[in-house]
Length: 115
Figure 1 (cartoon, rainbow, N blue to C red):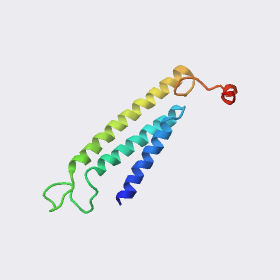
Figure 2: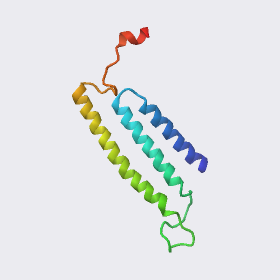
Figure 3: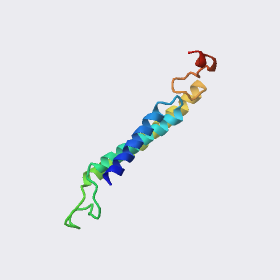
Figure 4: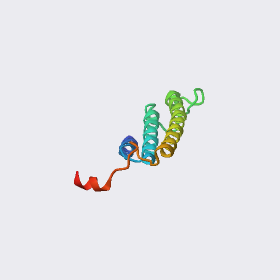
């Protein structure tokens, strides 16, 4: 179970980094979202993966750690706000520059093959 969980976090981080390094803004936004999902899974796993344990004290003899759950909830809210902010920046960049490239310049196809 832990190997599968760690593999999922690693795959999300790898895909997120790959998408962040793209030259267009939409893949960058998707990459940031994937990285935030990976961080959420990592934070959630820091409370140990346990089955059939209560999240609230007093309902069971064994209980799950509530701190990682609270951290993940906070990270979800911050990730949503960050994604909304980056989308607004991407829309503004597209409106101001006329293209959606991260650096604001469209690569020249003639020079690309000669480099």
